[in-house]
Image (cartoon, rainbow over all chains, first blue to last red; front, side, top):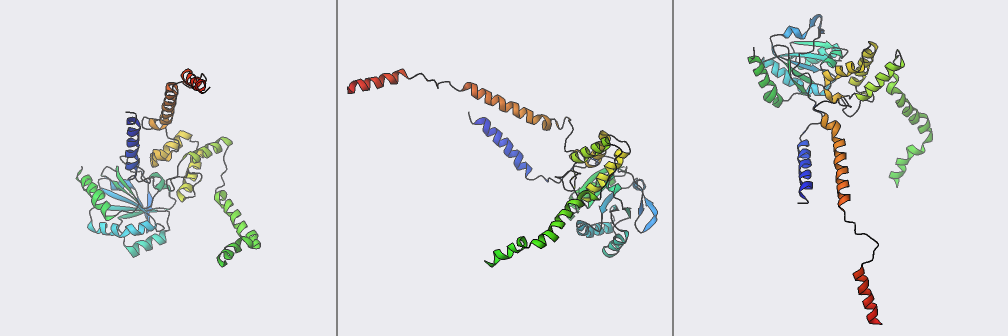
Length: 175
Length: 165
């Protein structure tokens, strides 16, 4: 009887610690999920006279991918985006974050351009509004312009297959 | 021992240390905030800035606050916070701005809400439980340690001495 309480305490702590092993300390739930996509209007890469605003995408499900040529993980992710764009299931909008236009244009020429538009955020101010901190980041936005999911870090084929594409299909079915 | 000798050369090369390594190290100390000279309107604004950058987490290197982090995002956020202070926004407006974008996780000092209640009250409750346990076990301890000699043992000892005489 004397040892029951310490045993219970040990087991409870043990369970919590064991569960903690699987937690990713870098995972931070985005407060943006369920909120309207932050508005902005930014020039489009390669065509400075055209302006992109998220409002243009109303009625469509789209992916918003924040990237830069300075980001090695973006290079890892890029072929997957190119392949996804070829399948034509969802529009991908890019946000070229704190980058140089020449470098970004060359990158897209060489590696392929999966983006319907690439908006240019040279100052990084729009990135702050989207709570961006771990390049690359990908958001899923629904037809009403609500952010429904956020993925931090390079997308993998498994991420696409298990989370992103099923979610896109579900959102497309919504009115 | 040729190895050891080689390792020591840098330490013994005084001119190299004094004229190259030391100035380099000193310069490193200056680069940190040299590029971020800010002119605050008044001391209150500066104090607000200092508290905010100390209490907000930089999400790029998550165990640093915005004040200490040299990540580009932290530099941008310092600038952003400065601009907001200049525009006359107060502390709660600026923390709201940060929480809306990066979540409650940016606050090193979490707000007192239903979800963070355990976090705030947990340590106090644990302390009370600890005090209670100590108090209870201290009360229960039998008080046998008196200086009164054991009469039975004394009697036995006396009998022994008596029998030997």
